[in-house]
Amino acid sequence: MSTSKKPKLIVDEDWNRQVEREKQEVSAESENEESMDQISMDDIENLPPPPPANFETLVSGLATQSLAAMGQFDPTQKRLDYAKHYIDLLEVVQQKTVRNLTGQEHDMLKTVLHQLRLLFVSVPGGNDSQDKTPGSSES
Image (cartoon, rainbow, N blue to C red; front, side):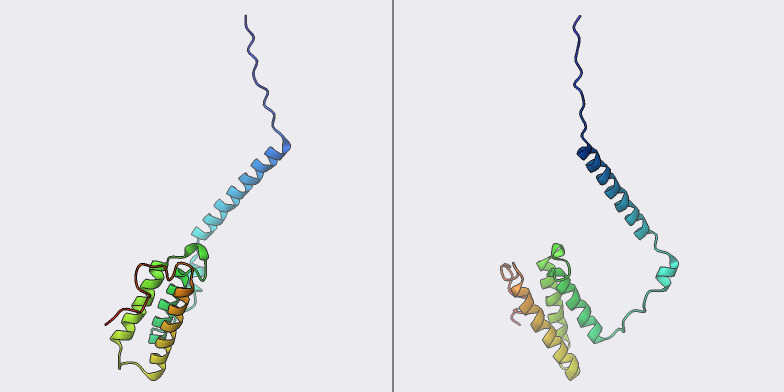
């Protein structure tokens, strides 16, 4: 008869601590996700009112979307194609509202577009685009 030897399993304490730590992290993540899914009606009712529906809010909203797409808030969310899209949308607004804006609205839009274009070309990869720089289309 042959005796088969089973390998002896050796588990060190570092490995046990690592496994326990990973279990706790997974548990904490799942609890966090569950709590985020359970938004109460009180939370919804306590939201601030929406901003006014005006030209400045429209321009600010599109500019903010462009900044976010340039990775200004979260570098892992950088999408330069979307940043260019939002800048192009602001240019469309500018073209379609010629002679229909107050002086202040005109200046705001012009300044916002200028600043976004400068930022776009300064973002790594922003001027490597095969498309033209935002706002450089010829009309």
